[in-house]
Length: 272
Image (tube, rainbow, N blue to C red; front, side):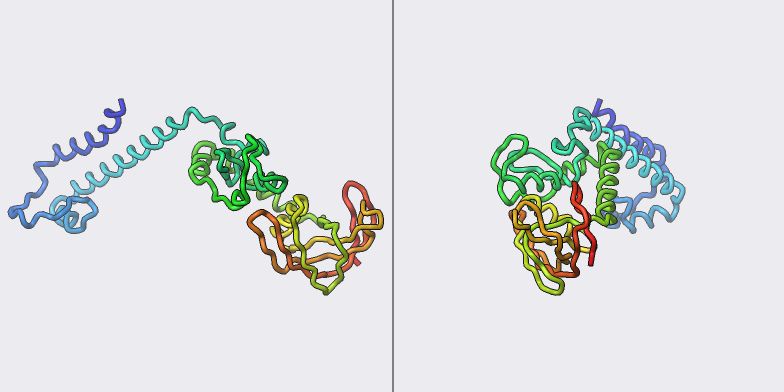
């Protein structure tokens, strides 16, 4: 069956050449023959057009139809070869959504880059098989073959996932909420270098660096050590070094003071 499908376009060309063979020009001298009979070769095309413009036009149309049919056959064959894969096979096991920027670990499991990064913040092991991972998994390249397969096989799921990611980033960008680092005292106009290594603060640092303002709040701990003090400082990131193991070295400077006006699941701040 495959042989019949593949030879059909060439049958179309052969039929055309047989029907028009009586009208095709011949070379009197062997040395005058063009080195190639590629239809794109200018010498061959110009020679043919001299007295066979209609034949050339028909032949060009036939070639276009043949190439289109070949492309359709290749696309159908490619889809058929992937028919054993369902949309759930292309989901991230951590977020249960279509893989976004897929990254494959050394043990052969694939996750969204963002999901894998958050897992590595808590420990260097695969969340699926618990195999040991390394800090190099933070900077692994995207799995391009899988990304192309997702775009080809489940384009709607992929586009929806991209739209959700963009909306989430816009919500974070437009939100008036400011994350709070509970660490030390800082002051307006004074530089405050930070070494970020805790998992929760790594996530805050990444989101802060992705925002347009690159700002977060800094407050020191109170006397009990369980909560932070009532006053703090808004800091702005001026420079950041992302280490290979996910840690950050931030260079920040104080912008203005703030006051905590309420405490619950979300802390409300009032800038001074």
